[in-house]
Length: 455
Image 1 (cartoon, rainbow, N blue to C red):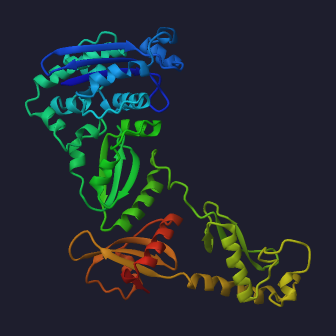
Image 2 (image 1 turned 180 degrees about the vertical axis):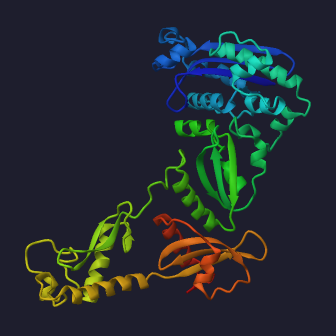
Image 3 (image 1 turned 90 degrees about the horizontal axis):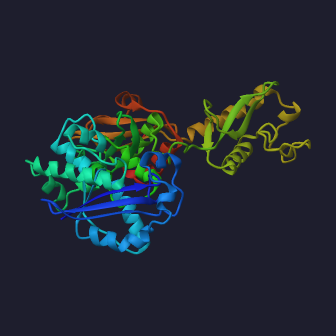
């Protein structure tokens, strides 16, 4: 038995919107056996543009039952039957959310007539309910009203059944099929073709633009996980509506998948990726020459198009490192901005400072120690490669760090000589660095020491 459903709502996502009208038509696969229709008091104002679209006004629903009053009847009609709707995840997310609030837990199988239409009537220019019905000769009475759209969906479902020569319905309802969980516009075949290997995947919108980039140790499993559950929030519901394609890149390891994901997020700036768009160290140690010719080290906030000698997430980290350099290389507290008052330099009393702040020491002599401190910082940054599984037999993956900076990554022959860093760099693809990648690689290297080749 099938329950064909349509609803009208106050907005596009269940967590902050309500149902204003509901229609349920129970169908046994041959004919309609029961119907239910009611306006619903949403217990909130209906936006003007939705009133204009549906014709349902605040006055019309003011004396209608609330959903909680209708919940027992709705649950009775839906629970034992297959839940069918045009773009089923939208209707199901609202009704499940409202039933949950009313104390009813529904666990119906779902069937989407958008997805079913794509399989049985391929090549249509549009699969929206209005356009699809026009193309199939179905007349919709009362468009954008629950009873009118539900009646049209019944006719569409009957046409789908009549033309289902490939047993599409049975396949979609088969136990273990992920069909009912997929977004309405994402072809199941694309998901089935995804590999069970590490890599990066891309969700595309109707125009082919990448709207989300993710990484995975198992691409297919991770992609499917996006469609499990029934989160009624706006972000998730908008996200599901905008997925039309999925593509992928296989990587040899999870580490490379993590790095590539970060690179691609920075390159493509997808609408639904938020976490890594602004992950950067906030401070850095910079060097500049003042008007008297003295080289000065300073901790400043990181800015675009500037490269610090060393980056830090916290000001105190940079300050502590700079204090160490001042002591080790006899630098001046004032010239390093560790002392900002008008008193005498505290380094003079402790004999750390040689008097550059009072011009007792010439710039060239002082600067030689500043350059030595910078070299010390740079030499302390390791150069190494992380060697791991490749994409195929006889191949290794390689992530290369040069003087503490991420250089790039790629794949090399498993019998390649790794004595020369220059040879290794020629085999790899250079990528832009960011602090997320650098921290990720250093954390990985600290744990997986057997995979490290140092230069």
